[in-house]
Every structure is written in C-alpha cells, then in structure tokens.
Image (cartoon, rainbow, N blue to C red; front, top):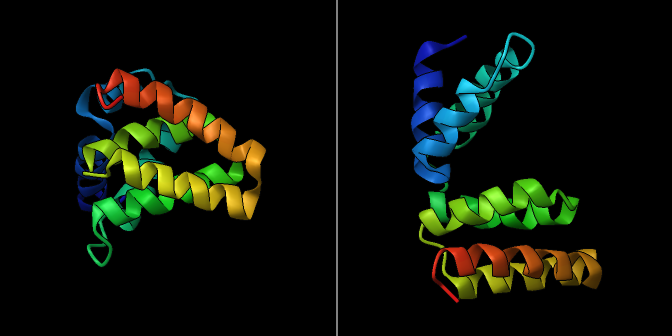
Length: 126
C-alpha cells in the first residue's frame, strides 16, 4: 500500500462523505473486508479523487450520473450527500437526474428522485 496515497484518499473521502461516516465505515471493517476498504480508499479516493484535474463538485456530478446509470441506489444516496458537501446544488442534482432519465430510462430517474428527495429533506434543502 502507498501510505501517502492512502492518506490523501482518506482526506478526500472524509471531505466528501463526512468524517463520521468514513471513520465508522473503516472501524467496522474486519479481517475479511479491511484489505478492500484500504485498497478502495487508496485507489478510488487517493488516485481517482486525488487527481486535481477535475474539481470535487464536477467529480460528484459525474459520480451521480454514473452510479445512477448503474442503479446502485445505496451508493447513489451516499454520493448524493457527498455532492451536497462538495457544493452541488439541488438544481444540479435535478439536472443530473434528467440526464439519467434520458440515457438510462424514466424508471431509474424516478429511483434517483426518490433517494434525492430523502437526502435533500434531511439536509434541509427541501
């Protein structure tokens, strides 16, 4: 493991998803899941999110579109919260869901809207 890239990834992950969420997630990792958590933090967050060529707000919008397209709604919910942390507005979330509807279908967009409404209500945005 590249310790420097892991630490960068840990900082990026906490900044987007929230320190409490990340700390809890890593603390709950066991012997079976810890290697994946460490690798994912280093690779996804250190290598991917650590590349400053794309700002966090844009990266969050990209993630919402891609994760929404895949229909991975648990991860979409987590990244919807992270997008708010990265300065994405509810209007930008709505526009991203419209893109999901156009390219992935209305049923998937409805799922994204359902989850976004919940996240936005919890955040006091609706």
